[in-house]
Amino acid sequence: MRFIQVAQSAEDLERAAAFYSSLLGKEPQAVFDPPGLLFFDVSGVRLLLKKGAPSALVYLEVADLHSSVEGLRAKGVRIVKEPHVIYVHEDDRLGPTGSEEWMAFVEDSEGNTVGLVSHVRTSGD
Image (spheres, rainbow, N blue to C red):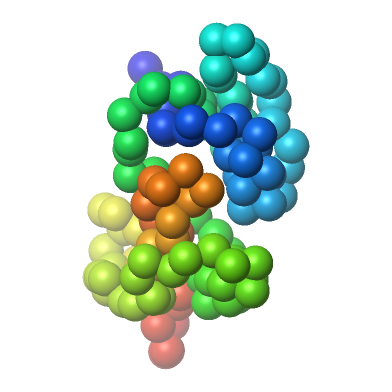
């Protein structure tokens, strides 16, 4: 079994396509409107933006959290919660051993919250 798709609410597919194209650095994989479906490929998992879907809290890994947040802020994206450390990984159960897990939260074009995540090696490793 593998994780194949996550759905997120989007009432304006054109606006959502612009936001997620900018965030993900790629164009949509498919658009079907009607009935109101927009798909992106995120490392082999489909992100479905759908009219009338419930809001989900989606977390995306980015290489440099601080730069990503500043780039989004410069584009006028609302930062819900600034970058902060949420966990230090002493083993590899949930992330790379010897790294800090940093998160920030932003609001997408449809009013959903999106988590951005980076792993930063702690000093001495």
